[in-house]
Each structure stands twice: as structure tokens, then as C-alpha cells.
Image 1 (cartoon, one colour):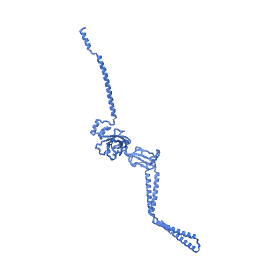
Image 2 (image 1 turned 180 degrees about the horizontal axis):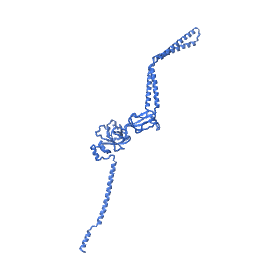
Image 3 (image 1 turned 90 degrees about the horizontal axis):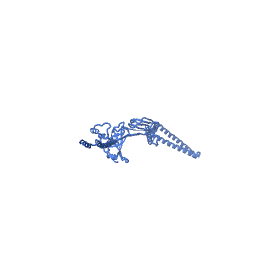
Image 4 (image 1 turned 90 degrees about the vertical axis):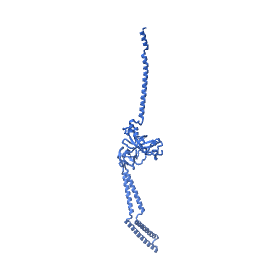
Length: 406
């Protein structure tokens, strides 16, 4: 073999087989690609899980820009997060949920029994104090007023008669009756004397006739005594006791007139204060009564209900464990569930004097300082009780005499 041939064989033995070199690399490359895909899928799942947890949080984490605005006392945009509001108004000590209620809800109940003849309002109408809302049939009550006044006039006339005393004509008549009784007595005595004389002379007059004459004389004497006493009474006039009794009777008659007037006035139902009609429970033609007699088909006992919607509050229950964080006049933020991007300033206006043993809670009422038309009674709301930026000027709830016993 030539030297050139030997050299080529040596070179061929030193060459690396390309297929054997690439096969391991291809198999290792597919394994690395699969591992990368699995790792990417795991990272994406972790990111999605974290985003879901962030969405489920009730209070969003404040952004850096929002924190900077709060630090610089710059107003945040509408729809700011709860954390931004916390930095602006004070630290949130406690958050609780409750319902919006008016401070005073007034139910109008009739004072008399009657039939509704007119209703002048509808649900949602605004009314002013003294405005006529409902009218009842008043014909019966007008008749009772006339009857009471007539009875009072009769008693007044009787009292005037007693206070004036006897008239001259009455005194003259009493005197005439006395004179007439005297004449009758004189005649009876003369008749008795004649019959007695005849009986003594010869018994011409029987004993029975004599007894009749004696009885007639005694009867005439009695009538004279009655006439004299009557004259004395007429001259003296009525007794003071009679005048006092007549005056008391006049007072009773006057009271009856006042009751009749009040009942007549109660047939017209007026608004006791400014407010908004929340419920309308009657219609013309229905019978109403101040007292319920049971059942569901009887006369109604409630006409309307109204409240002042400019004075609203939120009633919330605070756990006893958190009660130490609450104090009177404490600042708060109120957020309606219906409008989560809008908040209202509030103040703690009332703390219940006793706890609820069953629920282990204490009820507080937070006044909404700036309510608008969006806030309506019975809406659900969230209340954030804040730490006063000026310090707790009010006494904590746990130190108040009305709330000391839990």
C-alpha cells in the first residue's frame, strides 16, 4: 500500500461520525424543551392564583401614588380606595356592617273611630308640619259638639237663676199664700167654736161632727206654717250648697264641650313635623280606629308613617371584644353597598346602654352628616370607625355610665 493510501486511512479513522454526534443532542434538547414548558405553566398558574386572591380582598391595597397624595394632603380622585380614605380621615379602628334608618320614624294613628273620606298624600311625598294629610267623616262628631254646647247653656242658665235669687213676684206670691192660710185657719177656728157650743147646749151636734171641725182647724194651722216657711225660703234665696253644685255641674258641661271639640278636631289628621311619607296604609272608604280588636279584616289602626330623611343614621352591632374601640362622637366613614365608590362622613351619636346577651354585641348608631338623595332607609351599609385625628376628646364607651355594664 502506498504512503498516500495509508495517510487517508488514518484521516478516516480520526473523523467523528456526525449522526452519532447529533443524536444525543437531539434527545437532550427535547427534554429541556418539555421542562421549560412545564415550568412556564406553573408560573402562569401561580400568577393567576395570586390575582384571584387580590380580587377577593374587601379592601384594596393602596397604590404608591395614592399614599403620596395622602401624605401631601392632596384630595384623591372620586372612587378612592378604603385605605386612601383611611390615611386622609384617620386610622380605621373597626369596620362593621348595618342598615340605614331614620332617627325618628313616626306612625300616624287615628284618635277617633271614623271612615276615611279623603287622603291627600302618596308614598314618597314630602310634607311640612301642620299639613292636612287625611280627613275622616265628622258628621257624628259635629252633632255631639252641638249637644254638649246645649247642655252647657242649660246649666249656665240654672246657675244664673240661683245666683240672682228669688224674684219680687215669687216673694209676693209666697206672702199671698201665707195670708190665704191665715184666713183658712180663722174660718176653721170659728167653725170649731160654734159646733163646740152647740154640743154643750143640748147635744144637737154629734161628737163626730165636732171631731171633723177640730181636724179642719188643725189642717188649716199646718198649711199656714208651711206657707210661712216657704215665704222665708223665698226671701232668703237659694242655699250656697245649691250654687256650688250648679257651678260644678257647669264645669262638667264645659269639659264635655272640650272633649267633643277635640274629637271633632281629631277627624283631621295633620303632619306632626316636616318629613317624607314612607308608607300609605289607607284609602278613602276604609274604617279606622285607635284600638285594634284582633284579626286581619277589621278596621285599620295605622294611617301613614313618615320620617325626616335629612337625619339618617346607620345601626350596627359591635362585638364585645371590640367595644373598647368605640366612643361617643367618634368620626366614621359610611359606605353604601349600592354605591361602593362613594362615602359619607359620620359620627357616633348613640351607644346602647346594655349589651345583647344572645349575640354578645352592643348596638351603636352612627349619624350620617351629609346624606343626599342616594341614601335611603333600610339600605345596607359599611361603617369604618376611625381614630380621631384630634385625639379622643370624648369619653370612651367603656367609661360611659350608660354603657358601663355589659
